[in-house]
Image (cartoon, rainbow, N blue to C red; front, side, top):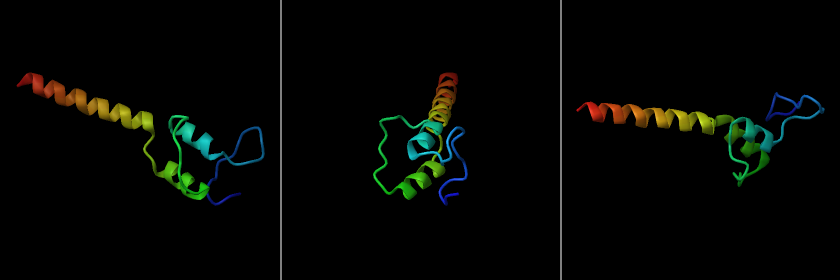
Length: 71
């Protein structure tokens, strides 16, 4: 048990690494967390998943474009 995570690896007796959590949240593998491990876990946990944020943003743009085309 560790403070920063309640999830654990399915095949190994250990929590997920920062990189594994970042992948679950769809951060690019090139993304660097320039902070302590504890803060990296917090940043990832508080983040809106990257792919979800992109989908929401594209949906907003699409809706605004449709409204603009109607006028």
